[in-house]
Image 1 (spheres, each protein chain N blue to C red):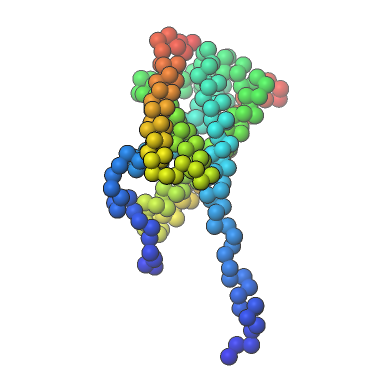
Image 2: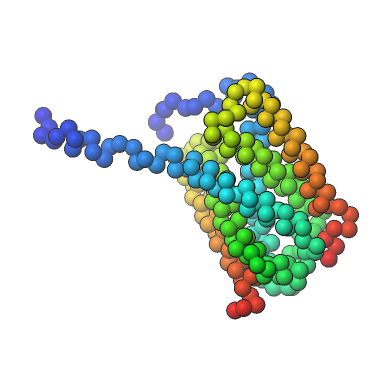
Length: 130
Length: 128
């Protein structure tokens, strides 16, 4: 590969929570991409008939997968909040240091609260027994 | 000395005007995904049961099939754009990078096609 000037990489930045919001957003996106595989599997199982779906469901309701669903929910909520923050930035607003720091805390807090609410809906005792 | 006119020398050498294509598509898909993904997650969590019959009923309801197809297609494109950037950022060996990008593109198209096919099969199943 030809030697070209590269944009500054991760290692040149001092670690701060605003940096964590960016890294976490990319990580959450990757988690959701992995979750997409699960969605395709679920849909294909559903299209393969009642027996195939019942089989897939017995796999998908294992305890490990419940943890995964909670992680996917958290990743979804965070990626959504951080994504909306990016869309606001794209309009040229909210880029000042103080505002960006405040919005970092905001998306963190909103994500925790919304994730807890959704995770309760998903994992509450007695849910989806049928 | 060249006999080519200055205009002839520069024509076709400018930018392809597609420098922001990836960026723009990432924004377009993300804007579309705000309502689509919220709708998907909320309607999934609002389902009373996840057995075969309940899900069939849900998928054959009014807008569910169309909503799911839109969500799956836009999410797949958004995911493909995002994973591509991650690979471009962190995989530096040229051959490996190309291979990874081809695998990412193929698997996203495969996933999206399989999902859409499955949704249509379930949603239209009763009427085919």
